[in-house]
Amino acid sequence: MAFVVALFDYGEGAAFGTPFREGDVFRLIEKSNEEWWKVERKDKKIMYVPKKFVEVRDLSSLPGSPRDIRSRARDDSPSNKLMRTQTQLAMTASSGVRSKSAVRSDDSPSLPPRRFTVSHSDSPTKKSHSVTTDPCLTVDDSLDFLHKRAVDACSRNSLILAMPLHKKNVALPGGKKCSSRNWIQLYCVLVEGHLLFYKDRKVFEKSRTSGSMRKKATAEKDLPTSEFQLECSILQVIRDHKRKHVVELMNEKNGVVWCQLETQGQFDEFKKVILSHSGAKEVVDSSSNGHAPESVIADDDEDDDDKKIVKKKLLAFFSRRPPLESLQGLVKEQYFGVHLDRLCEREKCTVPTFVEEIISAIEQRGLETVGIYRLSGNASQVQKIRFMVDQEEEIDYTDALTWDDINVLTGALKLFLRELPEPLIPYPALDSFVNAVQMPREVDKRAAMHSLIEALPQNNFDTLKFILEHLMRVTALGDENKMQVQNIAIVFGPTMMRKEIESINLAMEMVFRTSIVDFMLRDFHSLFS
Image (cartoon, rainbow, N blue to C red; front, side, top):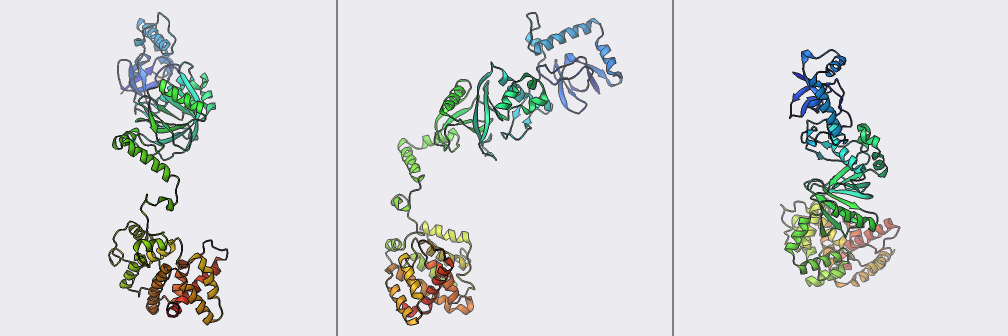
């Protein structure tokens, strides 16, 4: 097992690598090239050291103290003198201070190529940076990427633009949706084709001081929260977003981000500088749906100009949420939620076809089911019937495999009655029915109710009579299904009648509505004769 010993200090002013001190001992892993060796520190971290700064030693020949190493390193032999001279020239070149008589640029050590994939969070509360690097690099080296960008941002020659903005991550590389898509206020800096996002301006100004840039421990918390590479990027202006001055930036490496500027002047300056000082290209007339430009181009290929104009007008029309009445002739009219008169006029009948078919299927399935109309069916199955009826699909309500629960059918009938814009007992007639059912004498009550029922519109009268005849057959089997007249009245009272504007005393109103249905069922033959 071979070891290497540092002959000289490799300080913090060096351009590459990790600093170390004279006398430090490392385990030699690999002689990577003629100038850099791969070694392991005592804390098991892997790093690269310049060959000219270290010397290979065998484990048995290691001296007992750093003083012995320093005495050997300071030997006045010609070879060591030459080595020291070359080392000093290399460090002078790496620190950026050269003279005309200094060595050529290719004489300075060259670091093996690094592969960085930076993935940073924009959350200003996180102090650490998640950086994926070559596994042979140390933790300190993994921060060098953003550290170098931060140093460039502090240089007046490299700094191109700096301004506050709001940023939101829309999509990750590969099109995956971001887990957090909230807007974050950051301080943006443009330097050499990269956008750096700082927590705020104070952090950026603090990082510009030379001291914080030289100290790694301090520099880490002063680094940007994230960066965006503008080379091979696409810039789009989001014109129809609820926020103003929004720009979309997208590339394969960083995904999709949105930047929102405060004023029109900042917006124009940001866009102009990005396009003139980077490799970004602009795509015009983008929408706020966050789609890639390919989807916009695909739409252009598929639709001609006339279709796009019509589509744009329809989207603008429906975005205003127009009432159903204004959509006649534009959209297909539904079945549920349509006025009873309109349904009967469409089907040329006085009882809706759906009511006849669903009640016929319920009676074929059997009225002996315990709790019929009182128990609720599966809500998704009930909504499926509603959807199929609205789409005018053929439905076999007697199919026991599809509709295995009779309560689904009864639930669909109750839903239809509740969805009527005006109930079976019209709004103006409800108060008269309530007054009639409160009369003390049965004869007067029966006469008043009879006259009110006769005065109902023909469609309401026939539909109400058809449903009550069905409910009479249900209550006739009350011993089997446990649904007596009172139970049915409690279910259908609120379903058949309601006020256009409900009163505060709703409990008392429910009592009266239940009493009306109860009286109509008990005196059905005299009221509807």
